[in-house]
Amino acid sequence: MQHTNRFLKLVNEAKSRIRETNVQEVKKRLDKGERLILVDVREDNEVARGRIPGAVHLGKGVIERDVEKTIPDTNAEVILYCGGGYRSALAADALRQMGYTNAVSMDGGWKAWNENGYPTAKE
Image 1 (cartoon, rainbow, N blue to C red):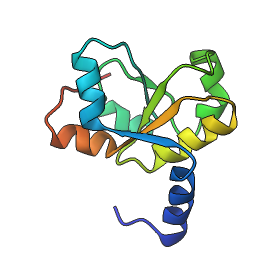
Image 2 (image 1 turned 120 degrees about the vertical axis):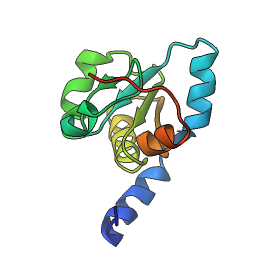
Image 3 (image 1 turned 135 degrees about the vertical axis):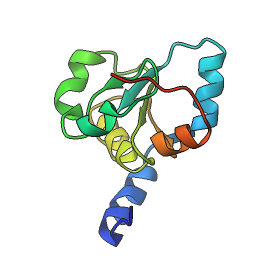
Image 4 (image 1 turned 90 degrees about the vertical axis):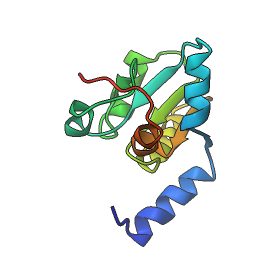
């Protein structure tokens, strides 16, 4: 997908305020048995095609409204992912503004997860 300059500017500004990780680090942590809070911020139709096993779905359009019910601990590490790492960066920045001190965006997102051949699940 070709992103517009204004969108990329918004994403880059958000990325300057958040922490990021990558798919390899997340997979390594899962393989070690860490219980991670993974949040898929993609649209419903994207999630229907597959997701990372164990991930909670809180779409980008509703995450700010619903996150406190799903993840009440604002100190918990929350790893967010989307298709490629742009929407998850925006979501992590929004959670940061809401007081979530450990919201992390997974760079590369679903696309990189699949390119690495990592396991997936269907709804």
